[in-house]
Image (cartoon, rainbow, N blue to C red; front, side):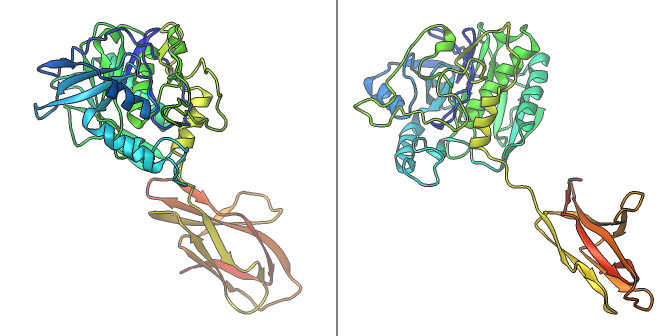
Length: 406
């Protein structure tokens, strides 16, 4: 996908039902002029090409078909649709087939787009910012890329993004490069088979704009690489004109359906970072609330690990008693059993450091001595993340030593 300012194209969502709004105005006849390519061919668009884009719920206005050289120096055809989305020509039929097969799947997030056209959830996305060789990012573009990646990590969704800098590396999920293009904006490849689009590009004409604008471009284009459509794909209203299509054309039932995500607007969202076009003077480079809702819908964070403890809530015999950790925290590094007498001054103290804690009688049992204390378990993983159990109040009759680990 491409992005432009006020003619600037922003992130497109491939799943119907996602209402991320970003700005992107498609310019007429954008010149690819990719400095990474030895040659560039333009092919004639046929009615069949337009038909395929409609079946994938893309707006075919301005559709282009180009031939570009890949890293192996062989020419591959790509559709450029909605200004800044690039889709491999050889993958389109597979995408249409998978969309058909998933349309009524109970596991599909919408009853339209196939999940195969969106990045799989619960995975790490490795991004390489290119600072050596061909496609080197200028300093300002690198700083903006750091901020854009942080935008996504701050959401705490089911995807984690790791950014490194160096030469292009095809082992990475995404390579971020600069290409020659006099107009500001960007372009991104679309995902396929659960993997992100492999390239996100910033146009050289973007350099010199504010850091917020550059962050906006990267955030938008990374969104496309994850499978996001332009929120105003149905009208491109953000670009100052209206190129609309029927939501459900007669010839293609449900083909253009853009299923609504609960909690997001059904109409135009003027603040989304995924609009087809945006105003460089007001760009912040940040998601709006509806963008966040949509991303959390597509890529929900996994549930947090749980920490439970089992054991008695009554200590009043000659026998030892124990409490045991029951939970699912991965890669546990440390256990801390915390103890505090009820209504006593001071903070809780640590009384154990393993997954099982035992208390043993200390003196002759006396039924006349009652006291209460609170106990809870803290579990810490190898990354320093801390998870606590609920606090349990224990009735103690007599004296016990709360000192024994197993």
